[in-house]
Image 1 (tube, rainbow, N blue to C red):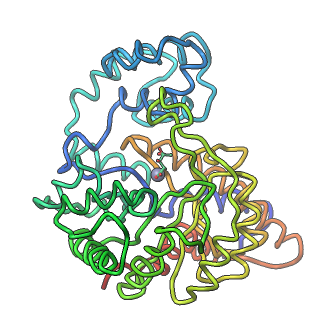
Image 2: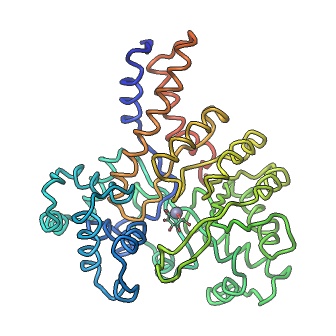
Image 3: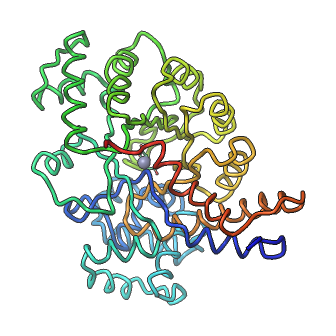
Amino acid sequence: MEAALPNIRQTVDKIVQETAIVDMHTHLYPPSFGSILLWGIDELLTYHYIVAEVMRAAPIPYKTFWAMSKTEQADYIWKHMFLDRAPISEACRGVITVIQSLGFDPSERRLDVIRDFFRRQSVESYVETVFEKANVSYAVMTNDPFDAEERPFWENGFQNHPRFQAALRMDPLLLNWDSASTHLREMGYKVGGAFNDSSIKHVRQFLEDWADRMNPRYMAVSLPPSFVYPDDSIGTRIIDRCILPFARERNLPFALMIGVKKLINPNLQLAGDSLGRANLECLENLCLKNPDNRFLVTLLSRENQHELCVIARKFNNLLPFGCWWFMNNPSIIDEMTRERFELLGWSFIPQHSDARVLDQLIYKWPHSRRLIANVLTDKYGDLLQAGWTVSEEEIRRDVKRLFQDNFEAFAPGIS
Ligand code: FIX
Ligand code: ZN
């Protein structure tokens, strides 16, 4: 059936809601990972985004806040960010969306009733509830062999879960060879302090062992805005001699998340990171020099987003993804999504959730679906105004490309 202009909005809204999502970057884990899977109202309230906000709204000494229990921190945040002022920020609004989606009346403002609901949940069934409500088919995790808390689950084995797939994360390897080489030696890889040809063999072995363990959809790293490629650093040598050859061998994309300035305020812990605008010549050089590698890229500076679209126009081995972190706000998601359609057509991944708390899937995705549907309605509307026609089936095809197929084709996984 042809979608005519008057009902294009309803048609797009329906299809965007109905199309399942592949959430290609999260910090979620299956229930078998125990307490490192975060879920429930107190984890939602103490999300590091809101911690930064409460330290502005109701400043107390950092050590006083961090000395509180999780429940006390959540109580403090509930009072100062929800009861004493409207929860107007995107992260606070998200908590309200979750509460409403779970069937509560947010206007009752009853944190005790909500806590009681979560006390009665089993995590296994609640995972299914959340993925179904969010209409997310599966989430790609962030899996870091250098993380001492996570590593034992991979070394000892765990029950695979169909809703979770792996991504091999390797920040220390590229950002801090001294620390990474110490960890690698502790893991049994005979790397020396200096990075030399022998190190290349052992780093390659590390990648092979962990890719065999994890079966990742891609390899990933987050990088500072100062990242340069190529240069005479150990990082460039690891990229050129280890990561990219291995990526080609295993048909894995390499995801670069560029622009994070770690811990500009260490007192805020996880909430202390900031951003900076990157010089994107690193991407131009990576894509040109390595035409047989595929690069997933997301950037943390709003000023970099337009450049990323133009660079992606020049290199089809670069796939922009998501509205990352400080970009994940309605005003910026709208702008980024519009310029991506205008410059890249359908060849991008519009969003990832970056969820750290399971329940966030039932706010991050509804919020983004609504914004993406708004932009799509305008873009299809422009086509209809020009006399083009578009059928419901074609809209389903296009939206599925955005929400699933672009990622699946670019990161098919290790066959
Ligand atoms: O490097 C990353 O994967 C970032 O997304 C995180 O470090 C960050 O804390 C986050 O969760 C942002 O949304
Ligand atoms: Zn992340």
